[in-house]
Amino acid sequence: MAVQTSACYKENGMAPYQYLDHTADVGIVATGATLAEAFASAAEGLAAVLCDPETVEEREERPLAVSAADLETLLVEWLDEVNYDFEVHRFAYRRFVVHDVTEGHLRATGYGEPLDLSRHQLGEQVKAATYHLLEVRPDGDGYRLQVILDV
Image (cartoon, rainbow, N blue to C red; front, top):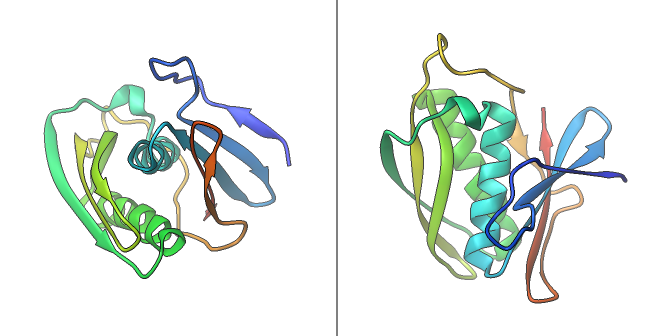
């Protein structure tokens, strides 16, 4: 699989997320110095698939929390929660701060604004995060997460 690097870079010069070439779906590889940063990067990657983040302003913050039996399932639940907020509550995210992430729980804040079709450029419609090729693992000095989104 070829990996396409995002145009966004964190302070350390590393892309916080990348896209994987995948037949009929979208794959995200997210990295971070900590597990919390990697989970935030994965959500930012998903948010950028849903809506161009350059068109979204950080006007509101929303608390987010999910629980699951293990880190892999937590990643799927986390991304599905962000997608649900976009699809049902029509809220576009630009950035996330994950306050704590453990084997079974994640607590975060998302920053963005209500979806405004006159200003926001929509991307792909995501049905769900999948378990296909799912990975959550330490990688060098940080963490690497990989997930395929069903579009």
